[in-house]
Amino acid sequence: MDVKERFEKILGWFEANVPVAETELHYDSPYQLIVAVILSAQCTDKRVNIVTKEFFGKYPTAESLSKADVSDIFELIKSVSYPNNKSKHLLGMAQMLVNEFNGEIPDNIDDLQKLPGVGRKTANVIVSVIFKKPAMAVDTHVFRVAGRIGLAVESKTPFDTEKQLVAGIPERYLPIAHHWLILHGRYVCTARSPKCAECGIKDYCKYYLKNKRS
Image 1: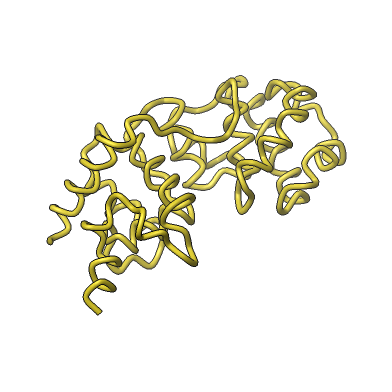
Image 2: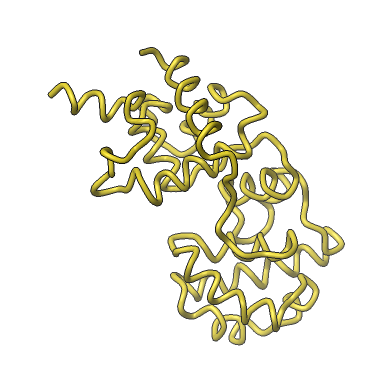
């Protein structure tokens, strides 16, 4: 099976069996999503959703967050990973939104990456989820799953994986394909013990087919 056929088979299975796939982070506005995604770096969505419930009660907008003390932000997010850095990033992000973008979330990757705490992955999430643009965010799950199942070949970096996925996935699928791969990696194609027996795409998976023959 070549890579093109593997893309077609895997995307076809997901489209038929997982027609709805979306982020598990809770948010009610673009601002809230960018906060949640920044907090989610190396942290579970479950923990982030617990933290943001109180956080958004106190800081519901970028303007309110831009006036916060970093120590107050830290107290609200201290149970997530790297709270010191994330506190500073959140404050800086909100201040830049207010001062340079009139409080509005930019709709393009270049401007988004100017915001403190926003790397390429976070920027791709925002333009894909909020603005429905054809972008592919590559987090640890997507990087692992794409390489394991054979959609990304000999990829050494998330950006390399992103380029291969964007090249192989039709534009109309890109926003949802990001979630398909994340959720598959989170619940089925797990890092240490992938659940191959219950995997719907195992017949197209490079990892499974290789180990099945060995």
